[in-house]
Image 1 (spheres, protein in one colour):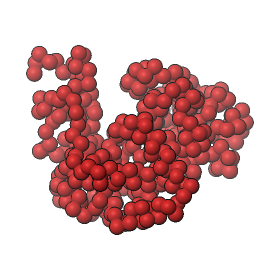
Image 2 (image 1 turned 90 degrees about the vertical axis):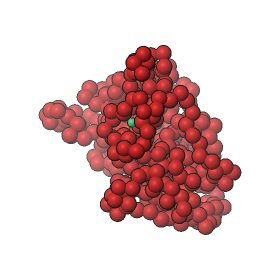
Image 3 (image 1 turned 120 degrees about the horizontal axis):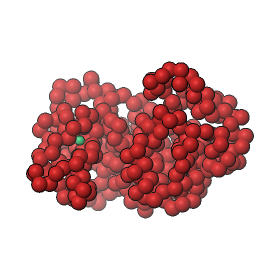
Length: 367
Ligand SMILES: [Zn+2]
């Protein structure tokens, strides 16, 4: 039985399969109207994210299934101290598949190891949000007809933007992708993403501060919001904010078939005057979010019918020898969980928390 916790859980081939199913749903919606008849999706949202939840619920309803669940932790048994493992076992009795949003990193993974139905990670802290990345990939594919051979610009807050880091990682698996990172100095892509994703995969990339200068070469422009509170100096924010606002004038020297994406909600980083430009894809992107979730629900339910055994992680593990230092890790609030670290570069003493993927360097001789 498959769950989807991290976008890396899907092979490139499986990603194309999902895109194919999603495209087929768009073309033949009636054929899917009863595909999940009699099936229930549980949406377990331990923190609110109305849009993501509604996207999952709309997806299941359009497949002819039904939806149960909650939208904030105060109304759930987690507020009474129930463990994620117990919650997953109980919900497995009531639903055929579940989507979990949780502030603690690794919580959906813990659920997937204890549930007897597939689990979809609908966002766990700053860790993963694979259905957003799937949405972005489907949008690029539908707009450009391909996922390789293109120049993708990321503009705005590249430091804290989880969606940006995940999409760059997902794009690293396709050929001839060039990345242009457009941001103020304060909000540059973190060096660990540059090292672990761009450099390790030999991806071509450039870091620039000027959106106008980068515009003509872009095939895709992924916009993100710049938040005032990210700047130590408010004057610096005032000075920079307009240079990263997309206006019709800025699009004058863009390609005619540019695709403009944004994970939404937008505040003011894209002028509403851009919305009617055919190159503005962000509302189509929101719609694609529903279609790719429909495809994912279908795929996971089909897999579960074939094989109900839980997929256990593979690798070389350290159990209860290293403690995860990440305060947002699920192990920080569920004391009964074993501390499990997986060796990722044993020769350099590097291991990662199985739940939140935090890196730690361990001196092997001391353990
Ligand atoms: Zn951890």
